Image (cartoon, rainbow, N blue to C red; front, side, top):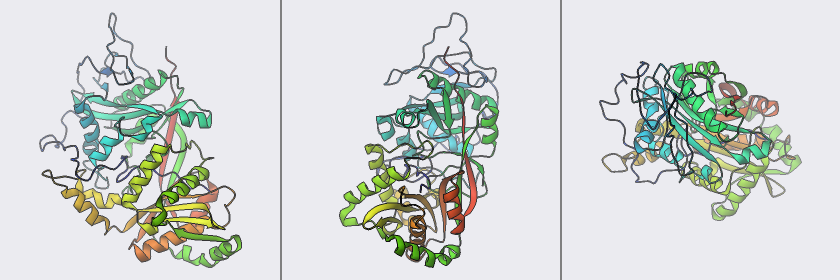
Length: 467
């Protein structure tokens, strides 16, 4: 049984490796800059020799003017993006290389969500690590870049695009992914960003773009299309309703829906306890927490289950050594010993569950900063608030093929929820995510008291061939 894929993040929906305890976060905008951006939604012209300007035509860059010599942009891998004519709206798409563009890329969500009380601000140092090719483990085997949309010099949108050869090899596909998508409510901005991502993939011979997926399904993915009235849980996305309109108007179509489930009453699960216990006795299933004294070996067991449980999942790709090391390191920082459990049959590990306290609940008041006046004040507040979190996310649940339909998954859910309620003071939990067409798992969750309360959608469209 495979339930879902966790995001390799630490403290927020758009993050990667944990930031050092005393490392300063990227400074927020000044007081004057944090006010409503006067340039958002207004048309205008802006020229810059190092940026690429895209027409609003979906998926295609406008041809360069006669006699124009493309300067392009440069990265460590000698990637370049051809410069093209600006659209009438003056939307410019620049590949993110400079410190100022990286800061604008990171800061943009604070403008997009400034009127959304449910948004959970990510830690800025986490986002900085996530987009850093030198520090993120994905870039040891995959490639990618980030684009920023500018109008009159002001950031109005962003996107990342990635190419994972391991995923394509595993599934016989020829696609790339886009993610970290943010945009003002302007179709020309969205079209320009998606055109930049598509053209980047076309240069690498890919014929399909799919997303939102931040690098791979091992990371945050999916566009929220239903369930806007509740806040996002740790490592899950949150977007404005108009994003669906922007993506679909840009020619993207549904590839797959992902479900998030809500547990606020464990009574149905408790009522099934006798049946689960009979199954456990019949199939010799036992559930136990990880052994801290044998943590290295326990991590190997977890990785084996992780790979085996999801090997046949849609667009699944195994974690690399570096990615799994990052995942284990990050999750140890926020999880609790009795929130990660192994299921064994005759002493053989065959199932895994992990429950995470909702770090978003603890981190929201920090507004993206772990330091203030050069001191780790935000970090201290974070750890103090984590002890008071009342919500959790069941972020990982998997059972190896050959041991499914034996009550293993049910026993794991039952035990981890019991631990959370009795030992961790957790009142509610989200289980996410599951594939829409995984009827076996979705029915199991409903029987155990889970309620489908959010839907995320992954889109795709063809990448125009490079002329």
